Length: 391
Image (cartoon, rainbow, N blue to C red; front, side):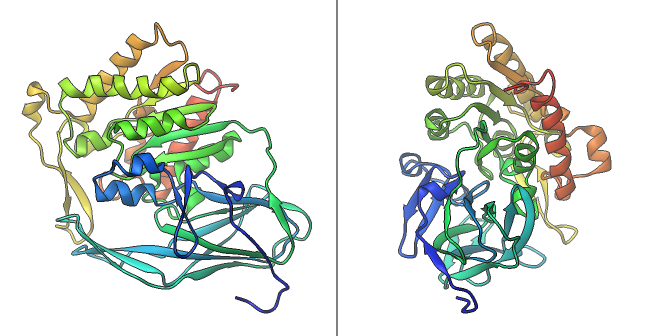
């Protein structure tokens, strides 16, 4: 801890944390979760367990006159065995003053989770907490938001400021609840407010709750129940890419699973605007079924689809098959659900976008791609005539 300031330590409570569904007490402090305990008890997959504890969209929000802030955290970094190139960079903390990105920092050290991509086994090496420091902030009362690293598990240990703080008051903004895959999670964005949902939320002036779960948008019933039970004014669900690249379903089971997922959400949000979005363009999966496999042939990490396109006749799923089925399902349900709508994900990122901003690993957009998707989402969803227009 720095000794050049007269510090006020404020206990971290749920009033200060936005974007998390629960805060779990740990030996060090509090761990934000994006799925509730009931759901976590039903997770049998290590990737999902890791993804929901990575705080994409989670931020501390308060009002203060402080010009210096310190946040102690215990991060859990990831390392991948057998993957070419350097280890992932330390996660970035974004500090916003009155809604504007003002400073960024990282926390070194912490735990290291070493993952074997071939077997999905993982080994944890424990480390010590560190400190995210921000100084020379503007004087005077201001709204502060500290966005946590979106792909780095982060335990909150202590919060210090050189002036008192209070929880951010309710500004009357609508709450947008979103669920999707690693693209929504923001896996290739370089900082937490650079994910496409965070960018879209900022531009639309809404409060984001991001349930984008890397590798885990699989129509799991526990995720549907989390969406059902989370207060929201606007809801969107992105469906398709993980189901195809995991080769998780066949056409016969996909349709009923979508219906069940939407039925569950509607139990808690019967008239809330609900937007179903299909996958953005992903050429390797448009007409080729999964499973997806990593390909290190050129010394970089890329992905390839390993299924047989001929087997779509027997019910294997591709992105084009999924889009057709989603459009059919939503079209049929709209007769009884006027607040339900569908958006083809290629309107957010399509062939022309891919030519200009190709997918670096053949699946995930570049940071510039996140900006493009956010812009399109704003135009087509929050803009005039969109599903969330005027709401």
